[in-house]
Amino acid sequence: MAERLAGYDFLTTWCLDAPLERVWEAIYEVEDWPRWWRGVEVVQKLEHGDENGLGSVYRHRWRSRLPYTVGFDMTTTRIERPHLLEGHARGELEGFGRWRLYEGEGTALTYQWTVRTTRPWMRALEPVGRPVFVWSHNVVMRWGGEGLARLLGARLHGTG
Image (cartoon, rainbow, N blue to C red; front, side, top):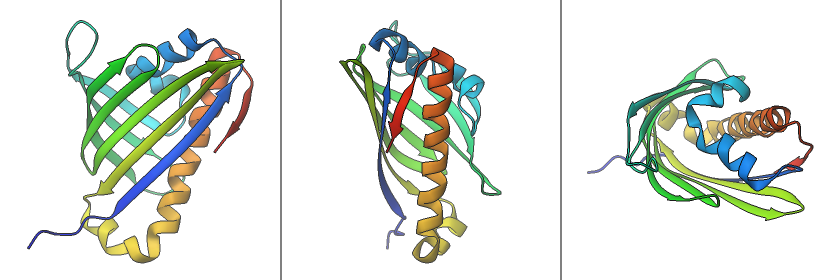
């Protein structure tokens, strides 16, 4: 019988007073995230994809306020410059992530992160730990929006 893995579906929105192309470049340059995004400890490129980066594989290690790190490899599966970046995660988290960027008076970004945990202790704690894991994710995403705004010298209108 297959083991049930805990599942999470997050949607984060950031709105920045910054041009779409600058926001795209910051998101697209995944290896630079630890420089500006608190909570991203390491992003290491394991495999180069094609000339646009499709098929690239990055090893990630993330940490929130909680006393543990989460590691996974992310393979870039779809790129539609400068509006869409998508990847598949494997490791301690498995699933997919999708950035969508929208241009208006500045740039709005959404990040959909649909994952399940693979660590046995996280699966075991999921019934009672879910609110804490959700809170932890939201903290890291808030740090990301704030860090991106600082990097771009832009105003962050909110995260959600």
